[in-house]
Structures are given as C-alpha cells and as structure tokens.
Image 1 (cartoon, one colour):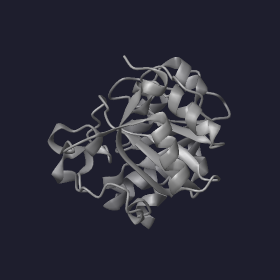
Image 2 (image 1 turned 90 degrees about the vertical axis):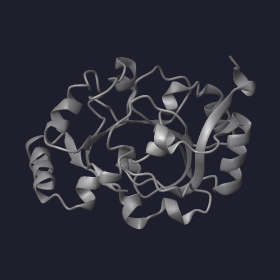
Image 3 (image 1 turned 180 degrees about the vertical axis):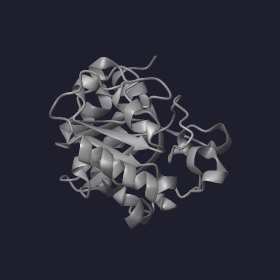
Length: 236
C-alpha cells in the first residue's frame, strides 16, 4: 500500500466556503471532501460520496502535496482546512495533515469516529452514527465537539449512548436532519429545544451553510444533485 508522499487520496470535491456548523460556524474554510463511506446513513446529505446509484464518472486521486497546493491557491492562509467526506478517517491522514500544517494551516476533521485517527489535526468534530459503526473510544476522547443528527426524538439518546469518555469541555450540538428542518417539523424542533433546556450540556445546532447556499457559490464545488441518502423521496 502506498505511504507518505506516494499516498493518493480519493477526492470527491474541494471548494472554498464557510463552516456552517459547530463552534466554528461562520468561519471561512477550504473543504477537502474525500470519497467513500461504509456507514450508509439513509438521510446523508453527501450521498454522492458513497451511494452506488450516484457514483461519479471519475474520482480524482490526489497526493497530499497536490491537495495542499489547492488549499494554498484557492483560499487565504487564515482559512481553516476541513477534511470531510464520506468518511475521511478511513484513510491515513498523516501525510495530508503534515503537508497542510507545513503551510501553517489549521486542520479540522469531521468524522463518525469509526476507525483510528492517523494524522495530526487541530480540531475534531465527531458525528457518531448509532445506527451504524460506533465511534472508537480513543476518537470520542479526542473529540473537541460533537454533532448529533436528529431525525426523530430517539436519535438524541441513541447518539449520547455512543459518547462514553467524551471530554467535559466538548459541547454536544443537536442538528436537525435536513429534511426535517427544510419541511419545518415544528414538533421535532420543539422537542430539541426542550432537550437542551433539560440538559445544559446540549446545544442547538444548525446547518447555516445550507441557508446561505454557501458551498454552491464556489465554482469548484460539485453541483450534481443527489437526494438525501440517495432516496429521491427525501428530496435534496
């Protein structure tokens, strides 16, 4: 298996936008979205990275130095670099993180935590998938913040059950699943408000980038319409 500078990553897209979620919401960020994820979440809003019915015609294979060059050329030095997917933690991120850090960039990771973390990152956003493979304890312990996707009321407790060992300083955001938010499910949103009121460890979250349609403003972002989870009944 290729290692170090020879390692090439499967890249679904790279684009310059803003971080729409969590403690860093609203900050400029260059996104590197890797291809591939075995979790198969039925509500996934990036199903084009894994769903068999929506496979792209080609997936670029780019080395760490090439991705660092894209980040440097398409975003200012102060912008975060966010490694997302798909599931980026499946890959050895050490060469990529090292190349980005040599540029002085802050590297953030968004992951379900299903595999060991390989690579030095500055920030870990953990989004556990209780319906799939749970996060490894060492990734839970490393998480700087947690994002729980809430489709129905049971999702909150199911997500919390995966977080044994989470640092007391790591906030836990409740983000309404996009189809519920888009369709204005007032009952679910009210339930989430009450959950936060009864558990101050929780915080309400939001996908602000979707309201601003920020990702679509960069010509480099993928514009292929893929329904949530690959299911046309859920919409986009």
